[in-house]
Length: 526
Image 1 (cartoon, rainbow, N blue to C red):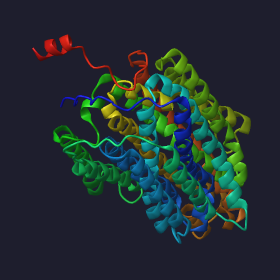
Image 2: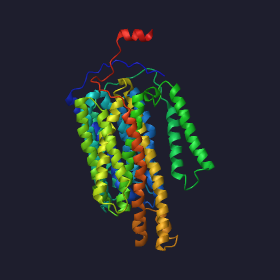
Image 3: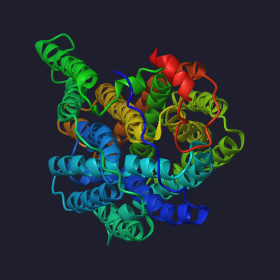
């Protein structure tokens, strides 16, 4: 399937002042989307404990929003190529605000998981549409300069989110529900700012078509595989009819989705873009970055609170090294990319540092020095900051302006898919190892396998457990966390290999790819 020719752009380039004014609303939008995840990450052990949830439900509170965000990202990216980008962004803000309120009023983990899935729709839209709008305003080379602001705002959200979430959870007259309610004023402010400052030309293309079948098949296939990962090994064996039905069914649905994407006129995941060498390698590397972004924040917060016994506020403070690494490296590397026009060297260095950080985290247990843990977290943050946005730039630099939305949606989709699968797989591995360690610890302590043992294995309300059982549970979580980061190390190595094979290229100065000369077109036609 060949790419459609890009339509000539008639919009005048925006001045630096106009860009900064529009960025004010866009950066606040991204701040809202980012802080919604980081606030909850630290408070989540307390939230699940208050709602009497277990480890599997803990994982699915995160996975539900990531899955909805992942499945809807290509759709939002494609819609941005077809309809008014500003209107789509405002619709996504409303979806996010209403779902955040619903999450705050949830009465049990089932409701919370359902509302988080709806919130994921808004999160996916906010993240991809903000990138698409920025790409429509700024050339790829200059975008590195503004990506420094982007990285700084995202870092502030990731640094301040855990602190704010821990403080809210520890404040008796607020409580964990305000971790969701706090997003409402930010969304209202973002909506007002965008209405005033964002002015993009409305481009309406003829014969618009949306690939509903492809989007549905992708979402269904990914969902079935993640549900299978959650329950396999506990509720049924790896070799069973349930495994054959769920794993086989998920693969078949994704195969059908691939076929649909190859024949429809407007695919949500454009195969003609992702089958090229550079986008394909950048997408593979993005999977490792997705693991770092989501897996690190989700399970490190749990490690500090359950494995080490710190309060939510203290856990938020302890995650600062990772977030500071993201802030510094994204800002500095963004400036350097704009000055040099090159991305590959910074991506490679970032992924090497990311690999080293994961390797260090794979050695931690419930007694590891907090200084060492902080060093490893700093390395992970630096790796994420240097590689995340630069991988998006690599793909955007290879496609015409008319395909920016679809290409940005594709890389964001696969990066989010990596995070979604990573959280599910790592959560399942953590749950199995914790259950085994708790059982062994209870036997060694001479505690009967019932009563307290059942509570320890099935609930995260650690404060309600007797002291001997509480220590066994803390040790189990602290020791199991290092094991799951060993898996992350292997995946980061795959991302590093993929990035090593990227072709070195300079970022273009123009918003759109230059049109081929008439002579070359004639020769190509002949």
